[in-house]
Length: 108
Length: 118
Image (tube, rainbow over all chains, first blue to last red; front, side):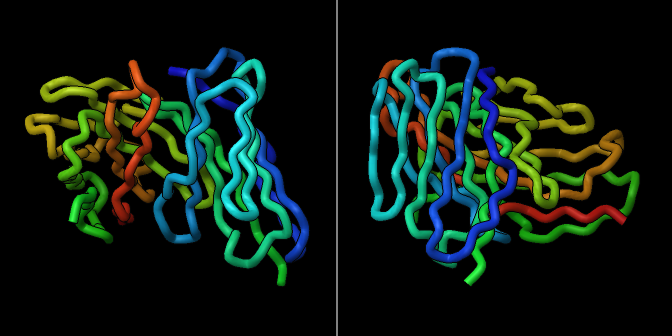
């Protein structure tokens, strides 16, 4: 199955700072998904990107899919304590492999 | 309510015993997946199934077995051959319409089962 590399592994920010996590693939992806897992919880779907160069926003979250469809990013503007958790990218639809995740901690 | 259910939430077993984790979904999804998550780590794919009576190994299938006798159910057995079975196990399901249409292929996860082997 297709594998994606996700960086960074950890990110600790002060509340109000921005946060970005990246997923990179050596092969062209048909689409990519992003999930959030709160501490002690299970992953929850955030969004799916399909088109080359696609940008989608959800309030303070901005998702991008690269022009070559080999990389993607999730950017959070002005982090809040509610943003704490681990953010994963995933490559559907066959074997649904996930990136290693980026764990975000936010200091109030 | 439509969803995916894992049971039990917590499970304790003695070393050397096989244990079966339940996963049931009523979302009419074709695909089901099992993942293992160790503390502070990502999701590692154990097995997945795209159709009844068929399944494929993921990245860490050794010491695990699955069955898919019904579309709704995908139980995972952790055998005594699994050297370090203590972990958080997550089951998920998704539609496979994405093969031709990438829409609606999001994975829905169960609440997970925390297995502790002593």
